[in-house]
Image (cartoon, rainbow, N blue to C red; front, side):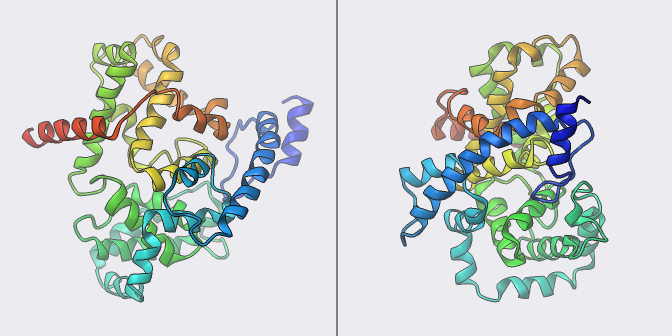
Length: 340
């Protein structure tokens, strides 16, 4: 490590603002260079958001709000905006006391509680706020929200992957009840059947991505076919965890800003941008394990760390992506999967 990197390491906390520990080999100097520029953007965005939030109709759907969300929601407004644009706030207000009642009912369901508890220690072991010795420890909060949701949505219950999503919601919302209603907005409305026992929506969207790659990045699609790879093997964690533990947390939050407002189509834009940007690198793959390694590599480095530039790219690099195209592809693949 050179002197410049050492001094950057001294200046940048070992644990980030969300409680995540910096990994071994973290490039402190590159991060400091990025963040010093990003801080200027964040300050400017915060001023614009504060001005807009003074109006009573601040987050009603409009082109202005969409534009603001794509450029990033400041931390202090993120929970409120997610709650408003996803319909979670309306649900919470229309159902006072509901969260606590389903939590109490869920706590009597030993099978559900056991399934949730099994995954608690596996959730963000690199986050100090989820460590057992943390004060307060967010593991109990996580357990409560997951148990309540499993009781509320019995067709889903608890499914692996939901622990990571709920963990992020808790870090942003800071309140159990709000995290619960945001989880309901995601699992029950925004993501089409990702977490049902058959995971039909998840399987469908992986196949849809394969078709979109064929249309937009045919050379990569041909490589995948040649090596007999299934998209499930390459991108299932991208979709099931909504890029958590795949991309840097700040980038994930920026993606989720758009996910809550624009829906699941955003996930395809992120995936296509990664694949298209690194097309030539992926095409160097010589065999099956090589392709898998390259798909892991493309989720690291400056492209995804510099979240502001990355978010600009996801709305330009993949080109047009209409809701109608996604709908037709989903319909087609859901039908094929049902016949299997």
